[in-house]
Image (cartoon, rainbow, N blue to C red; front, side, top):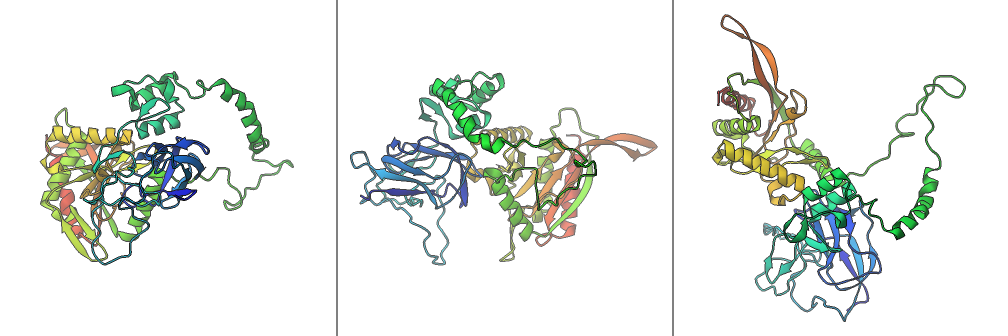
Length: 462
């Protein structure tokens, strides 16, 4: 066995190019055992805990919390200890060291869970595989991958996403009252502790940490010695102050995009380069609605009705092969806005759900997004999407169509307007709608008929 072993960041799901360090569970010089939690990493999809691939001494760690690590680059370096349990190198683990050359054959479907080797590759799903391997975000026993579970670190049991939230809110998990099963700290526990200030990380600092505080302050003082002077429109000579071009000076600090926002930037840029977008707008008159109508539920139902009337917009389009796939089912991508960025989970089989089923499904997706517990598979594969941005502000928009989808519906903020009726004028409530579609895959007439079908369904009383 070599004196040192490098561990490369594996693909944490669906070919993501990088991940952000949330929290190291060890420091350089520590001894770690095989499969113990090594680091918590955030991707565009989730927060996962990466276990150690070896037992031994930690020699080097790649960066600190907040740093972005490229998939395949060195994440940590170890000095394996032959006296501790190790994964037998002679066993057939199916480790993939790098990318295999293309053979022209379709790639096999990937497993939902990523299994990491010290080279950062993935353990293939093989029947003859005897080694349990190392699972990112879960521990593997025999050939069965179990669902992600809370891991005890420092005596505290919590899911990776809960640890990430606690770090973000400045909550000391060891001081939080756990309400979950087997003493697991939940998202709600962390939020409650943050709200009442009962578990502030600063308040729970040890005497040793408090003693180090002046030293740390002294070390960072040079960077803060020159406070910014008060802004004034006049120079020292009393003349109007000149400003600098943006390229010369900037008052803000450049911030590297990470996690969800980083992936969102890539997706939006890709969509902009591949789609020929066209937007139609109109107002849905909902004056006839009876009390109790749920706006989101009605919008989803109207999309389903329109998809059945005009299947061309419930489709995927391959711009390279110039092929179109019409879908018999309607899976609606529901745009969910968060502080971390935009998530679009899929409401599956919306065409088979009643009003209660749609509401329960939307609530479940929002809760899973908030808890960062949504499976990566649920963030793709929808056939059309909905952005209900009117919950905040805005009437009309040009929502972005993300390939391979053909269309997205945007719902603006409802308002009241004067509407001419027989014999006079009435005040009607209307919901502004924006339909953006890829004009390569659908005609203007198809888009207009789709929007008409939505308007007619939304005009119904219930």
